[in-house]
Each structure stands twice: as structure tokens, then as C-alpha cells.
Amino acid sequence: MSILALTVADALAVLDVAGAYDPADPYARVPAPVAFTGLRIGVPSALHDASFAASIARARTLGATIVSFDYAPFTEA
Image (cartoon, rainbow, N blue to C red; front, side):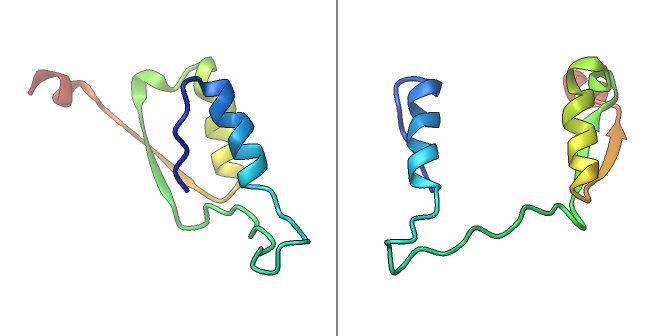
């Protein structure tokens, strides 16, 4: 699904409506549960701080493997 909007708030409002299950729609499907089982997410070591702690923890809870890596070589290239 692609949503184009002028603001993030507008995009979220559209996503809430467009992404919701509508039992009156004969083509609607019940959304599948989100699971990150088998997904590996690379997180630069410098970002392993409090601002990303909740997101990293949530991804782990959903089954993702978090892989820390050194981002410095990318900035030097």
C-alpha cells in the first residue's frame, strides 16, 4: 500500500482507515499477525542507545535477530 500525503498526520489518518479491516467488504481480509521470525535487522553500534532501545526490544519480541555493526566504514567511503 502506498499513501501520499502532505503531512505525516494526514498519512497516519489515511493509514488508519485504509489499513483497517472492514467486515462489510467482501474482498477484505483479516490482517495477519506481525511476526519478524527469521528477520535479521542491522543496527549501527552507535545507535544502540536509549532512543532506539524500545524499538530494538520490540523487534526482538516479534522474533527478529538484531545484528550490531560498525557504521564507520560507510561514512569513510
